Length: 283
Image 1 (spheres, rainbow, N blue to C red):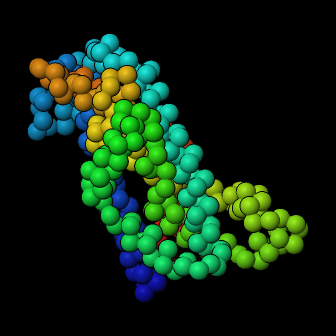
Image 2: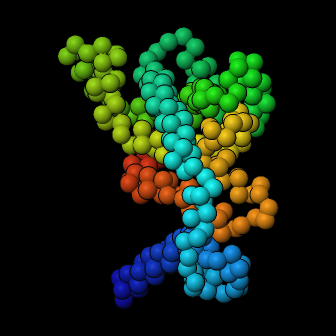
Image 3: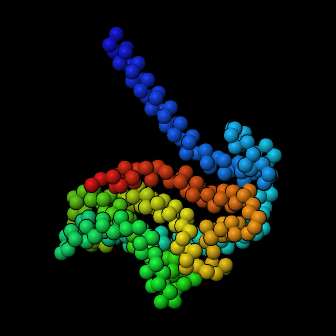
């Protein structure tokens, strides 16, 4: 009797757990579903029936909003600009910050503890605190409205260094010593031994950086003044600054801008979860 009641309690607990997750998942996905639905509706129907579930159904579906987006924006150039600057940031970020994290994890040198404390301390500093002096620096260098202003300030990231350091701390020293005995120097060991077994943390940093810069509006807005160099978020702002505001076109532009993030996360979510579990929550 006790075993059956215990088994029933476990089933009930598991059922409540999954139901709770489903409810939370629906709450989080509802805005995305409404955005997709609104992008397919005529302008007059977007805010109709907001108090019922029919607001999620594009009854009179149309692609006119997407046609307006592609007619008013050069999407090829906009996506090209965005992928170019984010790609450069990611290449330098994954290479330089992983090397820094590896040094903090596996090498002993004077000032290592102070440097690690500095990295952790700078992680809590918001971008807003340094945005103005950083802009002044970019202006004095003559980098305003150039690719350098978008890329260079974000090559080194304390959070990325910390993530890599936490992951590399768990790599057995015996593995590195075996590589050394085989004639591998520190640099060759890093590229031939450490990097191939660290896919999860690289994928985690890749996803976090990609999403952060893809959604970034304020910094590109400050340093990119020319229409030729617009990123995706600056391009979407065009629809807000023209009267009357067409919310259908705005929703369509947002759907188009969300596609790369959704595709990337679908294919890389496994590595993301593993990377967070293995490096992001350890002390």
